[in-house]
Image (cartoon, rainbow, N blue to C red; front, side, top):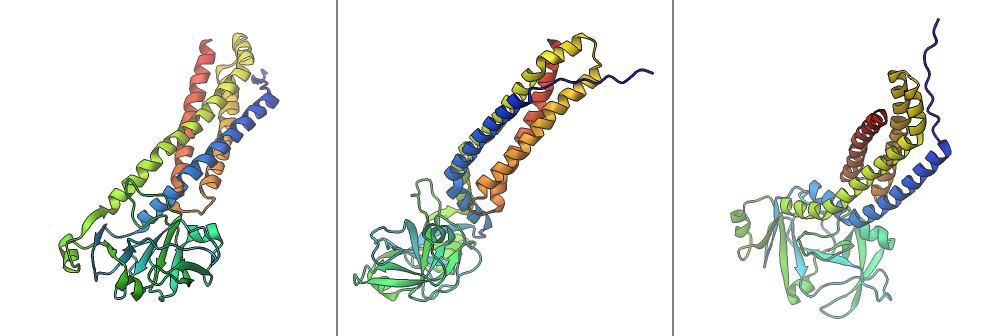
Length: 332
């Protein structure tokens, strides 16, 4: 009775482990760098995707719901009364009569005149919680006043996204302050799903600076896209390098066994077991690294996009590269 042929390609395990460790460490650094670079934009994209308004616009005065005052004077806050470092935030103020709906992801209920709502990214950055106090020098009377944090808002970096928006760490929403309204010029930002004609009826003049939420999403996506493409290419390169190294490490034994008449199916089975098996382990580790890197500041559904993109790109590359390497070994 003839025994089944058993092929053993004798891969160099120590050198393979060393190569894989170096590739994984490199990918980890790339993941951390990319996740930090696109982190704020990913948060903003998450906020935009959860919001339900169709567009935002500015007007001199508005009685519509989901309207905020934005002061031209530039209100600033500090984490402590003695601090000279201002929080890098966008400040909005609630109106006296306006109601606030769930059309905006980061909306909040009515605040007291000495109350504020702070986005989570600002709160985390400065160690702030509900009930804590932050400070602002009142522009009207010059007195430094304390404001109680009444609510922590979801993560958001700015109220509206445009192509030339300045970098902000987040937003602070103030309760209605009649001193500011009576003495400091402002504009109203309206977030709505109503037709522009209906919006105009609730404003003192025709709204301007109309910005559609879809355009905001496109703006953010275009900022993220180059980084995401580089990230996917880096993940693909990781798999290609690993497959080339694995193929070369077993090439001499593969050729020797093939020249000695080794069974085609058995030899291929061992080859794919080494390459595909090792590669799948690499893909799983890469996906895990991606999930951790992009989930460091919070696990939001939008953060799954780069993770899934890496998993798909690496899996396709793994199968294609292993197949091509196998064919080249047989040809040689």
